[in-house]
Image 1 (cartoon, rainbow, N blue to C red):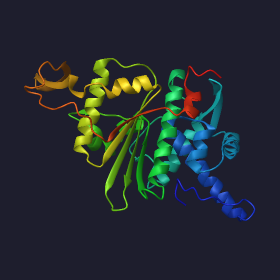
Image 2 (image 1 turned 180 degrees about the vertical axis):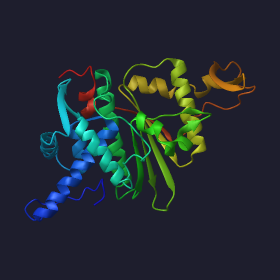
Image 3 (image 1 turned 45 degrees about the vertical axis):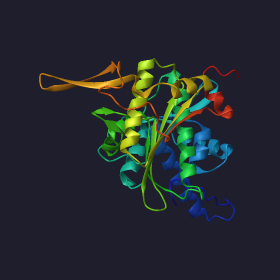
Image 4 (image 1 turned 30 degrees about the vertical axis):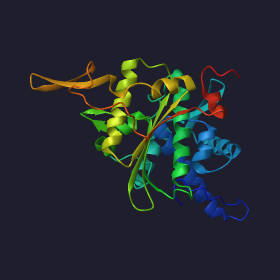
Length: 302
């Protein structure tokens, strides 16, 4: 059974020992996923294992009774995260099943609960990133695309610490650490990469927008099989980003005492030593949060 298989089994026609095995697999899927993302809710677990939200709530309740996870209400939503015991079991599962696409490499030593509990203001961002990641994975595995997922990177912390991604997302020693990433293989056997940026926390200054777009533009030029998506809280913000000149600023390198120091400088004359144009890659997409998902935003009126 693939870790993200959507095949459903009827509880009456399924043998008891097989049902227990399925339950155990769902449990470690939940634990390893939570180890990567720190927090989840029932909607995310439903999408992860391919069940209804009600079934996901029941599965989370069963895992919580084993004292592997704990929960709190934050912003009117029930949030789950690992206990210390759950963190230990998740690490053990990840080491045992290192061939699974969402299992971290063995040399990563990321701490689990309680140190990884995000700040309250970051909770909507973390949950929405997971939802869009799972949607992308579902689309990749659909009949229309028929792709095979090879690796999943969840959260900046894991992606930045995993050397697998460094050759793909780094530019001049400055890592691009997306909120989530997927490495998948097309039906013809070609490597493909999908990256996600959730920009809902606060408005970015022009320099920060330009530098972020610059990094992604260069990365997409180097990786012909990659695409990236930025998701915003409002259409106005998405339009601002889409009109931000990529080369309004450039990354300049100077050497001091034998060490290279990078800094962002404003481009004065684009016709001179910086001839690139502002045409963005057509593999860089901009989107707005779906109306049905706006309940996750901090300013949503319930």
